Length: 613
Image (tube, rainbow, N blue to C red):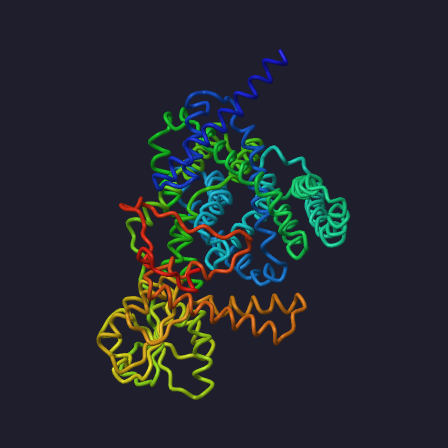
């Protein structure tokens, strides 16, 4: 019996991994995202698909550890000072959004004929957004650390806190809980506060000494085990205190965010996080009860879009009221329009308390799961068919009738440093850039940067290129630099043309285009770095400077050979290498049509010169 059980477990593990390995790359290749791939794979292998699994809820409970680990990693990126900075977004924006959505969704439930209490339970569960889906979609886009991503994270954190009072409210409203005393309810609150205080105390005074002790053993697997112990232990402590496991892991991450072991912890937890989070999405797909959907398809087909649209509308209105842009408000509304994993907990508690019956619980659960499945699709549709709003030009000066003696095009990292030398001598510099965010950032530091596309002839004229003594092209994109150089050389020959080069090949192209000066963007900084490396090895300053200057001259000679000889091979022999052997020349890509002949072969019988001997 035991071998058969072990075999079944192995089949289940292979089925889960196989479904993920096949579905996720396929859906990403189709542009549908990994979340939808996991959900579709779960639906396929679940009890209502191929039937490889009969109890998806058991897998779901275990896979929630993926969400827990995800929140732990997010916590590691949030220092306590940053979390304190987000307090208004967490409690202010979070409260407004949840209150508006709860009222709106309760109204939807009443409109569909539910009693106020049942409608409130359904709406309150749907208000609790899926942390897993939103965080995964934000992570795939790289938006978690951006301001609009931080606002969504703040609301999600507040929703995690909200599950506690909601469960208490369900218990209070339950007709089967009349015997529970106020003392018991207060005991639950005190237990939760005590668990929270215990976690904070452990994070402040125990975790760093623990990891310092373990690091001294120099055993990698022990550090990995300790990282998992911290994540799972904090989650267990919060669960026993009646709070969210994810909230416990997040707080543990925040408390370790300033630790010297932060990056090590993140590296140890990340593989488990990815695997378990994928398992969570698979379990959500499995838990979609197609029989319930088939029996009540008309009701569910009407309620799901009604709930999602209502929630999205409420989120959008709150976002606009709190001064978010249209694009940011729309993005937040679409990403957070679904119900989440905590809804299952709330509905189960309501069913156990007699507030809703089994049929309503099944319908509510199916509605939430469908909303989670539809969210990635809705995000794709919105992104493809709703064009992003153009950035506001309010407060952005437009290049027109400029007359600086130097015209600088591009004000990124390179251009900002170049400008300092010119401004130090009082040179009148006109600066243009096509990046609106860069212009706004420059304004905050006291610079006047005009909006203008340097690849357009009319913009160059409006920027004063016809009067400028010098035109400095400091843009990052080499193709853009080539286009500007071509225009300047042909239309504004009176100006000296200085261009930032991307690499050696680009530098050779710029020489061919007739620029007056070019510099490879990393060359001088790399030379100075090499000189500093010599000094730190004990080389005298004068000798280090001499070596740097000799390398600079050597590179100039090599570059001159490359320009004259037509490419990289012309200066190949001048490269200093760290191998004692004579370097071999690169093998040509195509075989020569004829044998090579020496260009200085002597006639037969002629005496050899001393240089050739």
